[in-house]
Length: 299
Image 1 (cartoon, rainbow, N blue to C red):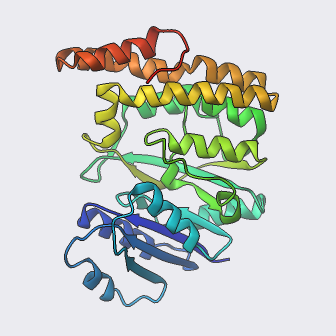
Image 2: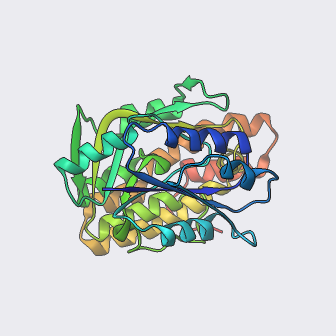
């Protein structure tokens, strides 16, 4: 089986090159990398031309598509049964494909595989942030080696606290094409997509073997949106929608998890002191409402 590794690219050239090199270094050689460049950084097409590996395809968009439409383009270009939508600044450890291939041997046809992940900073050093410790200790399922999850169990777990790492997931291509990426969601789009797949009957294999490095930067779109409180407006509206969806699905535990969105509330509460210190009073108002207010829709 050949794996499609899709790399929707925009941004830092050196980090993108490190991501590509990590694919080239896979111990399992049966892959095909497709890079879709949504930027105009000089020298990038020429660098790809020097690689000399026919498993690597590169194309540059004529016009900037934006994140969601470039992701959709990548999904449309995939030709094999399974794909990875890799982050442009993340790193595959050499054993990544061998781990997901082993999971597929045990659970053939599964919709999603979430392998073990470690966190790195902007310089590539392994770190252990508070947010990731909370994910692992409070919300992620306890897995010794490998576990299959799905249905209300998986939906409830993720709506309590979203513990997966989107760029590290290996997806069955036709499953990913079942659902639409939502352009109205910027920060919580990944959770919405996985919940939609679970509703469609797809399952996830969770494997504890560390084989992927997810990069967290000090400054990012999601970090800035968090401090301003805008990400939580989006999150609250999504959880209210999810509550209705889970109720209609006949999954009361998942509906309750979406109604209370406890992890998201706790996250907002932890950001309040920083927003106060920054004098970001609109952010303070939004964070306070999300952390302590009623479950109600807002603009």
